[in-house]
Image (tube, helix red, strand yellow):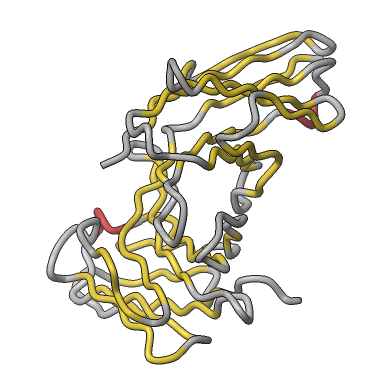
Length: 112
Length: 114
């Protein structure tokens, strides 16, 4: 089955700096790669996703890149703000009704 | 749309008691997932259903755990008997399925077993 590895487990950055979180996946059949943000005491919420027919996607300060050959994808947050502090999860899934397989999460702290 | 609904939001019980967690998926979604989240293990998939049918329950930790989905709008996760190590946040999530779509999480149930 699919296995998703996520690094780093914790990340601290100064406000205004960029943050990068990286994930690798094992199953070349996976074709959907979402990123979820979970604030303390709340549910995971989708912030951006990318499908296997696209190499990069951007939404304001957030971007995701996908390298299918190397089977890794990354989340980039630019101009970080204190409200970006949260746990971020990457995930991967086959097409169809199969479940998302999540990484272990990255705790991002943005220091003002 | 009200989103995925879970109840109760918090549950405190004593070891040995039966616990039932409830979930109502988003209307029109035909895939439902139960996850458990702890600091040590992160987000673990326990079981998932497609069109009310359990597809994979290999993540269910023990026979003490069981899940049902009697219809498209309701699912339960039951722990009997509960143990302190079951303490965690349990999330239900749903998706439209068939095509690759966003998975929506419920607010979770924080379970504490004393």
